[in-house]
Length: 68
Length: 266
Image (cartoon, rainbow over all chains, first blue to last red; front, top):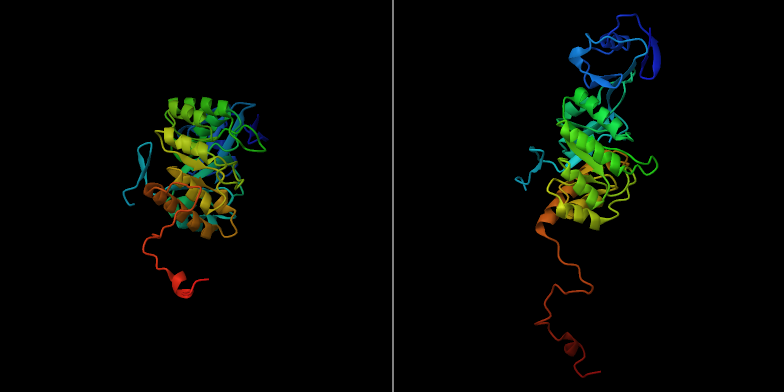
């Protein structure tokens, strides 16, 4: 299935979760200052490994940068 | 002035300078500026994760003992800002948010309508909302009325370094506000920060004036001292302005030296 992660199309196996997308981007499960939005909703860290991702999903993964 | 503590949403802050982390050339200069500023709060932003990024700004701030104040920089709608606040709460485990909703990408001026909408929604959700706003006293009051923990009017547009263009409005906002007033945006150099404090602002938020100065670490110190000086001056009470001079030395008892220098008259 194809999902869009931070604006880029990615191919994922069915059964993928938010955690598998983070693993794909080599983000450690305990990385500081990281948050995930899936189709307009924040997925809290404790649910990363249980939250399935469907075909066509939009995933935004953000982290802290300098600003403001 | 040790007892002169700033309280925002029940939290005590000893420093009246809030640092903005934007614009520093690297983490090392940011760290040195953090220490020199003696600030306790520092803004951070959220952007798409960069897998190649080296080191986290969070580690820098933790090491320097600063708390994170996430912002919603770059949001143009209330919806976008609210969603960004949700992400920030998740990423940084804080319900404090510097709320920015920009209405124009050239001036970076706030969108008043979207700002109030977002502020109201976030307050309802339990966020501690610190909105970046214009220097309009009516808008500041509206933001306070919906439950914002502080109001943060601009002196002039973000990053412009134009100082405080309407000190009269800032004074009006200070006069009516029952929550802390933080001068946010426009500071170009130390005197601008001092003026903000002299006008009665409770704190100054400063990013570009420090981060983009030729010597950021030295400017961090200059602005810290200006904030302290301005605060002291505000408490001390400035003299009234006058149109004409007023001698500080008494005229009475002045010797008639003219008579001695020309004893026989002209």
